[in-house]
Image (tube, rainbow, N blue to C red):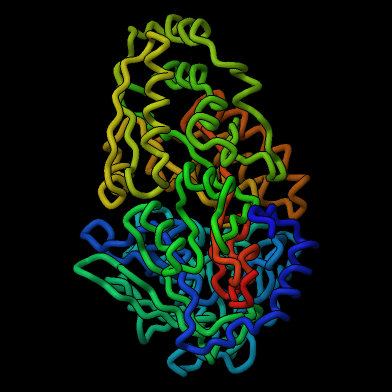
Length: 535
């Protein structure tokens, strides 16, 4: 059996059908839970009080829990493309300017606790996210900030009036930020502290917590769910591991059926070469990016010349290959290479790494060298390769003689709030898109209320180019504006893109649907998993 699979939709469709015929996915009953491992760690704290509240949660790990339980009006289709109705029966723009969006709910929708789900709940949920009293600095409210008013008619009709045209709005309604919750469980002006979550999605969730840390979430099939998704199992257990190595050992021993984010580069390489008995490594297309962010008001990097010099020095090819091997490739824009509108703006401007060119940039700006900087990174959020990545960045910058760089790692629960408050001059971040459109690789970082808390503002980008691109339903037509934004970013360097990653899942070979378990936006789709017959 081929132990490494590059997913091709036509092939995997046939493969999934064949495997399903071999052994009933979900036939094992409640006691036959599929076990899934992750190194994502969730802990409550004063800075992060509500990891799974849709009005607060805004990272890939949290969303992978929330989206299993909280339903949205729209959902990403299995093979990618435009979102399709989920809680809604139908949705669409009803004007020519992409400013009025109407949805009709499915009949007789219910939350998991049997309470009716109506248009009033949709209105409550999205207005709740937008409410300034619970607006979180992570930037989640920005996804629905363009909603001017919401009207309901009866129990099934919802109309969104937008402040400005936004052809990407249907994609936003497919994200957990637009998740539908009940006012019985979620207060209008207060976050739901802790790990509890309720909704009308394909599963209910039960958490096992030790201290303030989540250990395990058990997802059980929700009999009240009505939507486009077709769960192929009755129960999934998601278990959190301290390290990628511990997660890998659990898979090999049979304690786990599948492991997802985040495997180490060494694990991926080893599993590719020799996965062992009854284990498959599956590679799927991904849109994950990594980048350096800058506090452009900080003294050390306030000068554009310093940021440009760093862009001139970083060797992305050596960084990607040296740390992640075949699992990453150089990225020369915030917009990944596979997204419509991508252009290699940073390469076009800086070409190959050059200490001589970097020195000239600094000399012209009268910057004294070496420039002393600290690069901050998180130790426990983006995988075990992060430390090695920052050690190599440090070596590249210091090797030029133009920088005196130190590095410092911090746990995510401390790192993220500190970064948002501007405590770090330079810091490493990753991005898993909310939806696969170029706008979602630009607006979150460049908007006035951006997710980084960055003070950088460019009126041409914010007032002209991005709004113009969102008016265009044809995203190819929007590319002209999108490319101009990327060129400005390469000139000003408020962020510095580093690499784009691939996605990998390792699973036992009796688990079906693995090829669909992660979509291109790194959304975990547990409903696709089933249990078949081991090869």
